[in-house]
Length: 165
Image (tube, rainbow, N blue to C red; front, side, top):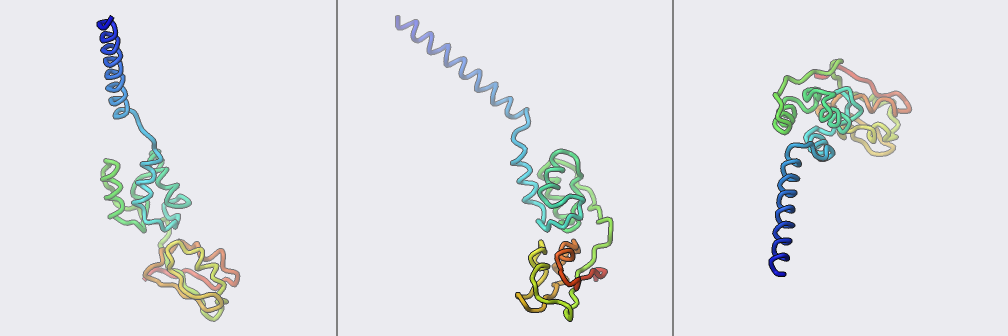
């Protein structure tokens, strides 16, 4: 009687070990959850949401990189450093950064027209616009990425783009 119990335990243990080894090998060979790697790629991007890469923001661009719909060198605000970090993470060769289709400019605010509504400040993804509610606003040129996201929400059209210095 004891021998049949021990034999059953050994057979079940052998089956469990074999199944565990097969699952371990399969997890290394098969692709895992892509949302985790997308989060890692998104974390390496500068989060300017400037759309200079051709995507609506950094998260859609990260998704496109992982699904091989986009190259890793389309982020001008991230520069060469971001391309290198993405290449290291994904095991790809780094490539030179593709510059934006248009020359990036810098937003300027015509202070005589600004009504201090804060719409532009709220739209700026990099906090390059300063100013309090009901007071004139200004752009910190060194922080502006030229994404032009501040222009549409301005109710008095006091924002324009000039070539970057």
